[in-house]
Length: 379
Image 1 (cartoon, helix red, strand yellow):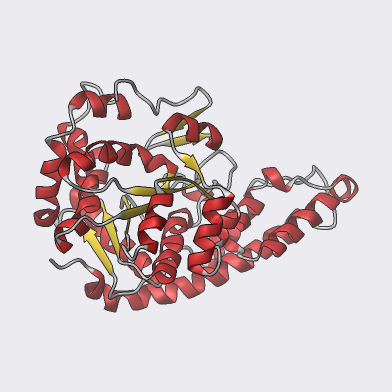
Image 2 (image 1 turned 120 degrees about the horizontal axis):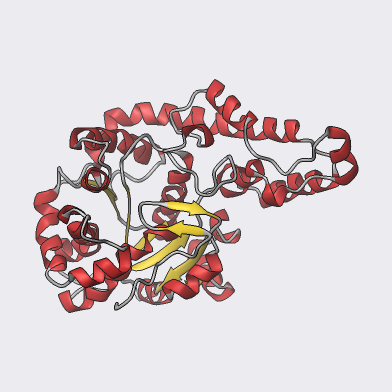
């Protein structure tokens, strides 16, 4: 890599640490050199899994690297291992759950192992307002949300970087020896003010890509479901993988969950526009009441002219996570366009969906405190 290939366009910013503006997802496929998930790939996944997850049907997971090869290997009984992660800078919000819910579906349908990396070191290095103790505490809290999703404890291994550094560091060193500063500078835009820990960090995030191969003493295919904003780390990883004797990790990229204020990606740093897994029913009501919609200036005008669900944060929340029935999503959107459904009723439907989801999730989250040790990685 000789130039910064993820340099953002003027109307949006997209890096592993910051996302702002309206993202052109089709442009990112061209810019990053990924492949669109097409009908042929969807058909192959459906033939193996027996169904398509709604995030695949709706194009929420829309881009990939090497998934056709992964399915070729799977059909030859060479199973892949899943790897995904989370940077624990605060409580988990519902946007973080998207790739996790999808990963659980893959784990169940393909009967595969999952390694989940909680990067407390990353959030400490890139956030000067946080101490290492804070990010580690949040890692343990976030682990409860991971477990609450319903992963198989016998096939799920949660890594916390500072706790499992003895396992990760030798692999990170192998990666670091082959990643030069000009590469990370070009890919991530680092400069002379970047701390040396941040420059080294991608090597740590590469390590779980290679860990299954080391543990099984053979080359193991790895699939990473993640937001498209994280692709930069794994472009670097893929560049060096084969020189280290490993397969290049494959990726499945999801679009990023939108904010309730319509400004871009859901972000924990703007709590009033984000639903957290720890939110109360009253907090959900307040946040949804304040959400941006595609409604008209008055109920009378909306009944006459209809609303616009395509620009509505409430409809986006439903589309991305809180309604698995495609017909139900389409029905609500059509009622909005026709003027039959007003914003207050639409918000009420979403509130019910979210509160029902959180009630179930929070019960499982509390139970997860007793299960945590069953999921933490042990070498």
